[in-house]
Length: 336
Image 1 (cartoon, helix red, strand yellow):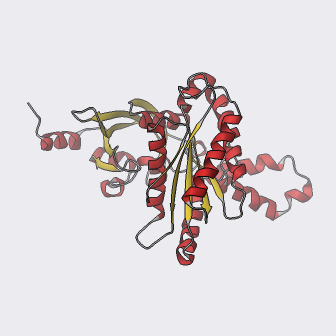
Image 2 (tube, rainbow, N blue to C red):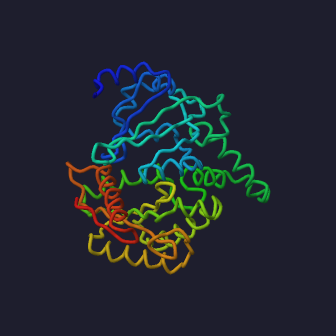
Image 3 (spheres, one colour):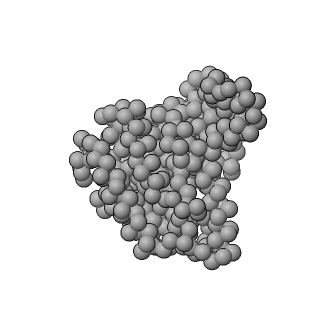
């Protein structure tokens, strides 16, 4: 006997723990249902949460170990339980005990992810997060640490302090690439310029294959070293003044190239994938190669009033997923 959907909704609305439902078939897993307990837990209204990816809850603190496990579960269509550092609407920090459950239809096709949330501990100290005022506090601590190795003249140079603060906001600490948030700000600027000048914008995402399995074998430190090497290879190939590279997700690098069409981009990116293979980084759990490989997705378009940068990003990520579905270690272009 089937249960009335309205009864289920009433049940979840009355649940004491936070509940969210994300659409696994749509780009970026938007929230399609959120209960009042989740709004109370986070301080965000139901309307603010609906339609968005829940990643806004962890602000700039995007390199937590638990996020790697969560992203791997999402990518593989699996369930998991993780403890995340999240930020409430009022800026206070808290531990979020998250249980993720994949939901499939009668044919076994993944359609949604349900997540259940409860506070997992006391309020966090501000220095444990990288967002907002806490991020500035960490930046000041990093700056103070760097001061110990400077001369008195260097310590008194305000431009050096400004450069250090800017680098903290701009650069990913592990790879030296741009942070995702900073990259998206620059992309918004370049998008408007390309639209006015009718110039083609090409986005490329590089996603490491079977990287969660690599991390299980070699640990966090080994995985970080591997990702850093590959990120440097990718960034070293984008050398034009208009090119940009950033760390997009835990195991993804995104690049922007202006004026490069799909054919040129495909050949260019295939060469980069070859350079990654040439590193010969041993991967004992990859089913496509003895070594670490990368899948890439390309989306290219001349910006128009009907097209947004977020749509192009979505097309790029869709191309990466198709590259994975087709066997990994390859390049796929999106139809934009």
